[in-house]
Amino acid sequence: MASALINVPKKAKRGDIIEIKTLMSHIMETGYRRTATGELVPRDIITSFSCRYNGVEVFRADLFPAIAANPFITFFTVATESGKFDFEWIGDQGFTETASAAISVE
Amino acid sequence: MDALRLMTRRNVVRGIAATTASFASPYPSRAQSAARVVVIGGGFGGAACARALRRIDAKLQVTLVEPNKVFTACPFSNEVIASLRDIEAQQFTYDKIAADGISVIAQAAVRIDPQARTVGLADGTTLSYDRLVLSPGIDLRYEALPGYDEASALKMPHAWKAGEQTVLLRRQLEAMDDGGVVVLAVPASPSRCPPAPYERASLIAHYLKAKKPRSKILILDAKDTIPQQRLFENAWKELYPGMIERISLSQGGRVVSVEPATNTLVTDFGNYEAQVANVIPPQKAGTIAGIAGTVDNTGWCPIDPVTFASKLAPNIHVIGDACIGGGIPKSASAANAEAKACAAAVASLIAGKSPAAPKLDGTCYNTVAPGYAFSLSGTYQPHDDIFAEVEGTGFTSPVDAPRDIRLKEAEIAQAWFHTITAETFG
Image 1: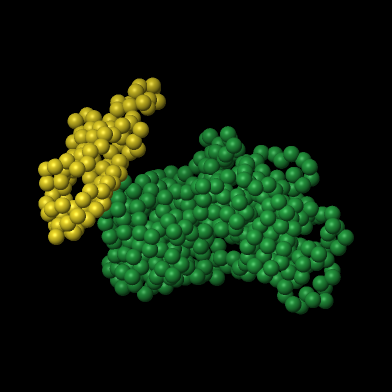
Image 2 (image 1 turned 45 degrees about the horizontal axis):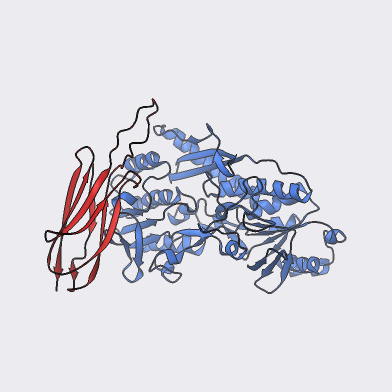
């Protein structure tokens, strides 16, 4: 059921500071909650997020149980050249999602 | 001096014809000794509180300060937007309240001095009080939504305070071409009447289905879950299939700015151009509550749940949408219940008695089409210094009820509106 939303400017001038926004739908189950019958609900969180710009990692974050459901991660980078941003979310229970967006730099 | 001023104001409100009677004060000799309560805000909270105070203790000098001479009710105003009802059916005067012996002053309160216990009015007069009740409702946090301000609200109406804005949104819908997209921007909690945006979307769909059937409604929502979600979603599927789409917070639905020039709503992940844009911005307690020093950094007023006394300013009580009501949703029904409980507490405090902990009932009706409504209700009591729903009292209409139950609830909703307005203004 996971799905990624990303917002990368389509165009930028070389050297511009650009804002990138991402939102991943995810339950972010902490692993600390119990069911009505007392059983522990297994942890199910995203553990890492990364962004590569033409293959070079420009942003990375480790995520922990205290982070709310549907993590919204936004960050800035410098537009250096036209190309592609690749995003990757990795988590518990084999969770993995990717997304990408192109940018044209003048 | 104050008593004289009060009388003068009161007669202004009641009409110049009262001039010859201007010395026939209802409290000629008691004016010096009777306790004075000033209530600011003449909505379902303030007007009801003023009346309840007089009912509990006829010796109290009660003054109601409200700049509008005509009150326009929010509940059922979504029906005005959908051309199901005239705005006049929402409007009430303060004549009957004045006839109860309450001084109704048609002025805005602009200053409050909690130490001197005075209220300054826009016309320069000053009222003194022993206790002050604030029921100022909400104000819009324009600064929280870039691009949105009073001027752009004339192009992208909020219609979140009933009156001109309500009529404006209706006119825009009437003028829209068939096939247009109506976009509603819904703010995060807390805000006035949490289910109302979805009732509004439903009733707009009812109007469009009959008049402009190719049109669509898009809800851009800063919330993930909504009150009575399954009831709304089922009703939309049943009554308005394919007409209403909702983008929730986790789907990127939160509106972060608006562009009035192009009627565009901007989220973190997309731009949405609307033929009609209903922008409901984030809200805060009415401005006068801030002037009184009763607002904390949430934008709302923390209160003692037994007396509604402000936790930040002495001798001031806050009721209605402006107060932090804990589990109680911000609604006319809640404001009205709070008003009566607050009046009882204020009268007790003035009489030197200790106020009893109140028990409040709140009900919220959602009408999604004529003859089709469902409701949400609960009973609330102080618990750990804040109002909480009493366990086992929460009620929501069943998800799979037959249509005759929905019809019955629609009739009850109408009766509720008639009762609450008759009791408050009639």
